[in-house]
Image 1: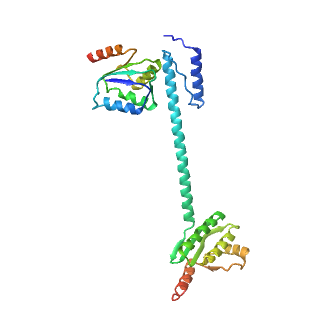
Image 2: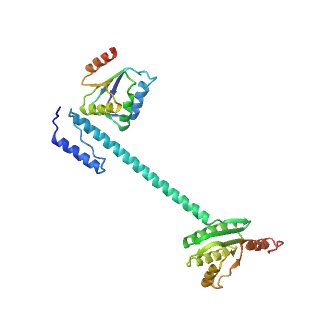
Image 3: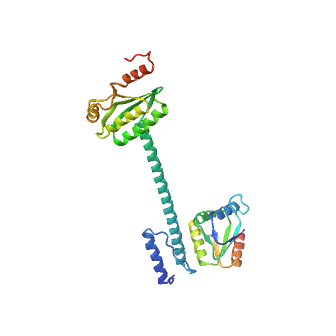
Length: 105
Length: 207
């Protein structure tokens, strides 16, 4: 599953993600590649909801182009506890390579 | 691992922490693309401030809602107290009785007058029995108001009968209005009612 995020990520966006990735969703338990733009920001509601995605995917690779976005995602990962299944990368190729390994594992 | 941090950045961070500790949750740290651990702290502080500001706004909204509810309750209570302090009863078609209890102040007398006159007009009452048996005291300045109410009832075409006037109230009436206003006064409400019914139904005798 490939997710593109830019601008403000809201609770509505997050709920849409839960529909696809939650139990019964088409992408439940899959590998996820998230591509973020520099202007990506998360609303307060989205920040609280997104960490609950943990357990609904096999592995999530996030491509970040901004240190601020990375810091924001790092904080959300901290909210969710263990961060083993989420990894951040500077390029899409690195991210895909890691996801391939995750699939093999 | 030591991370070199600009003094200016730390200064801004401290300024924001100080402002927040004084209750200003609208301040935010300016974020720049520094790829270091302090950036995560800066972002975290901004998130925390955002949450505090949102909680403050929610509290203010709840406080306002509580104040509105309290105001509505107070108004309802006032209406209820006014209604209970002026229990006008239609004891017979065209006959209203108002048993008064407690202390009568100027404000209460004004409420009683307004309520009673409206009911007299509405019910096309022929008689009004004002029972003062349960009245402990009437403020000295209030008695003229009650006497004026009695006259106003007569002007509306109804007869006003007073019952249960005790010695103290009687002295007050005489002191104010010795003989100027004809008052029909009876010892008990039952006596006044018997007189009224006899007047309305000539076949019935008052005891």
